[in-house]
Length: 265
Image 1 (cartoon, helix red, strand yellow):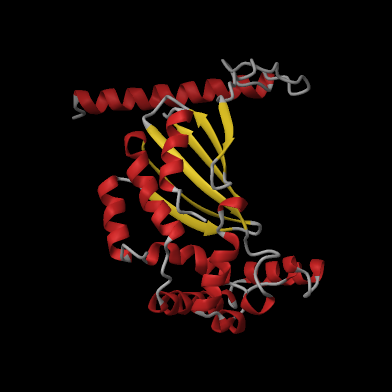
Image 2 (spheres, helix red, strand yellow):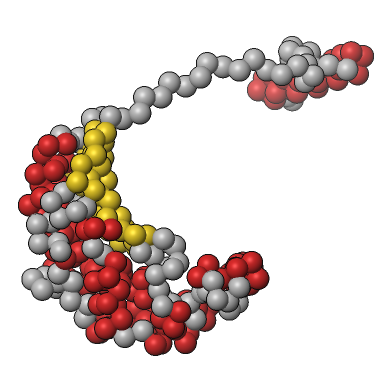
């Protein structure tokens, strides 16, 4: 005997099959899906309204040490982002026999200063709730951070110490050198890296800075003295543009910068 539930289920299945057959017949007859609007793909859709954009206001001044300071106000969140950019990266600035020294210099800024160890820098960064970054590109190096706007001064003091008073410990250099050598060895099995390096050499030539890439030989040749010399030559205020964006006042930022970077030669 069929239960009421089974009977209802059978009826629903039969109804669904009938509806499917009806829709299929209608589509076959008209070539259209019933209930679906026809889209004329020969007519370009009407563009919607342009999104509104309002560029933040910004000011540009020069600090007493010669660094340019650009401040843009952005009030939607109580945050601040600071980027100290210097002219000096992997292209045109690294000696051909020391390719890789620019990257080592940036990475070692967080390894200790004359007043803080690398561990103390990491601990203070966590206590402040700030995120510090340092790196180099082809034409420039960057040191900076993001933090709460209320923590601008202590966070900047920490980064300024890293920028002005790094000690570049020898053991940190050896650790970074080991990592770099492992990465270079792994790159030999990566088709994209192989193709990119070959393309640069073919396009620019081995003598052009853009055609050179770091190798195991150049990385092994880098000494602590090379790192110190690169830092002294390129991480200087006269080569720097400092950008600050966030919930700040330009006059306040300038005063904080003058105090924090007063000893940056």
